[in-house]
Image 1 (cartoon, rainbow, N blue to C red):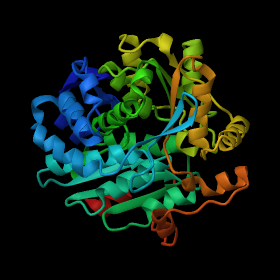
Image 2: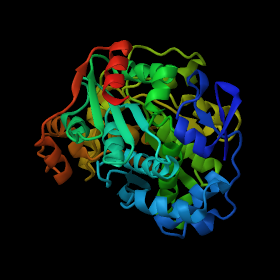
Image 3: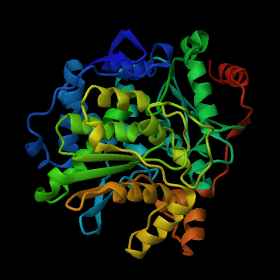
Length: 427
């Protein structure tokens, strides 16, 4: 699989190289110049999740890895389901929170860990990543105890839920966490700065596990095929999928799936009040505002790193602008939609509610809608209980994590302080 850097056309790398490097020159992301559509989509949709995902990923990666190796990696990574639940007539929810950290990022995080375990060849690797909520837990659990791999996670102090935080800050061992006095974008900026620091890159063997990494992105393609496979056959060609969007990796994966031949009629990338992309699509001017805190904190991103990949696909007609929607949903509307969905018999946390609202805004009368639930409601226990006036049961993984001590260190929003700290600790 040949990938090129979207900010440096001269930099071309293999899939293995892209996974190991993470981020390209000039902080560019890697992406293929073209995709070969799958010739047997209907047959693939009849397979089980693991078998189908193995074939999709082998098709994307090409001859760099034997199909048997990819199949074993997928079996190890995808050992939990993606469930499709009917919420109302012609509207379904794709539940992606049945993995070990109760969030969709378990799919990408675990597949990336499998990739690096195969590719690493005993060399030291340091995963440096920023999280706005769920990435931290997924990456930490995926790489916990992996030989020759350290993980450094930056998160905005006080701006993610306690349940999200405790899932990754309580592990210790090879997992090192920093609570940054700033926003997710500040954390992301420090990660990017580290990747421009040749000494740090060389001494620590830096890699990023954010959705920047191509292995995570490709893994996410697989559950869109699972969603459509679980629809009644007569409804598959009408699928309109709504994705709660912050860093835009998840909707990027959906667009890749469509480019491979998955029948996706429309896509919605629905944001919270951090509405850079909806405003860009309306005005054609890229004008990020300061990041605002919201109930849907995992989407509190004003400079989405995966947008260049999405725009590349749109500009090159891999997916039509006419069938791509992006709206923002404010805090009051998020709460109202949570009540509305709950009245229909489905419990949605804020991110899920935003995806539902984005779907309903543009779903055609004869369309079939799928909105994504990217995290278990209990990960946002306080806000869900407060908004809906209910009490939630706490899943065991969360209850166990909440009972443990937070091991994160506080960190000022200063790259030089981070640099000194990780070089002393890990080099």
